[in-house]
Length: 490
Image 1 (cartoon, one colour):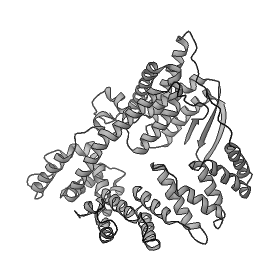
Image 2 (image 1 turned 90 degrees about the horizontal axis):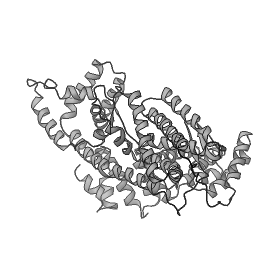
Image 3 (image 1 turned 90 degrees about the vertical axis):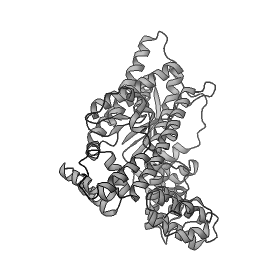
Image 4 (image 1 turned 120 degrees about the vertical axis):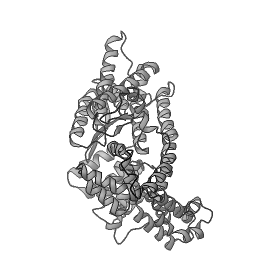
């Protein structure tokens, strides 16, 4: 993994980047509007499906189809069936277009089959509960016999697969977009953003066409902004933060050097990774954006005005602490690096990169105060994205296993982590933390809310029987909670 974030340029509110803000709002409205509405309706339909006779009829036939077609993921499907994970199997079946075509055939469950009547009735009810397709309709279709719909090359750039996917793209849209917008002007900037998105979609359609699945996300258009940014600043030395696998640092370098680095990264990831991320869309956006910016700079008689920072930010010593810590760590002087990481974390208490380095260094002394303090800082991060939740859970497991003489968790931290782990579907640790909170602080004001969130998350994930275990506790701690009302249908 390689990425770089510009640190020098900052927006000026004397000339706000309104088009960048508008694009971010449109993306968020689409995701939390029709996409989220469709997702909730599909969740309700999936709940009906799991409770109906359909899994018993269709899942064995789906596994037989996988075996018939020689699918290499058949063992994974059998494991899901054995675990009773009907929701995951349903999602899998609905993304297999060839199987869906077979399912719609009259011979899927023949009329002479004893299960035909039950299957026909349940399938009709399930279909009636499914919402009209929105995401799949406006996303790019990579299916073998997909209809050629170039409009989706554009509409797909305003769709996202998850909250983390959306927020990641919007962060980079803002970081690179405002500089490009201030240089090009709002109208040209919007046109280039859309053209860059089309460029990314065109290359991904060529690279992934016929492979199945579908493509969506603003990353092609955002990559176009990155290409524009590199060409706009050319040889001007710009300060960047970057991460390469597990190594991270700050560097000041000509902006144009980042373009070949980004291109090489996308090609490498495309060759080494699976189809989960459309790296060719990123590459297409980079090439389209760089070409558009180079063209406009050649055509314009007057050179583009490159945005620069208007106000110098006073040096608070953060960069010095980070540089010292990295230098000492490279020299294997970890004990001397520890106070440098601690000082940097104090200045940037929400910086996950610094907190991770402080925590990992302090873990060499699991009985030290630094180890406990770094863990607490990580557990109190405010962000709710998937990456942060995973970071907190991994840190929790390390802390719980290593801390000496034992983990020191405050009741507020137990409540917070239990709710966050429930959201991250880390059910075991979420339940353990709730039980520890209930035992050590039975009068804690957030006890009922924490249990309610755990129960609601279990129900949402289709684990209603597991959630039902907490019914009596929930009636006692949060008798009027929405989670109890949902649980009432168990």
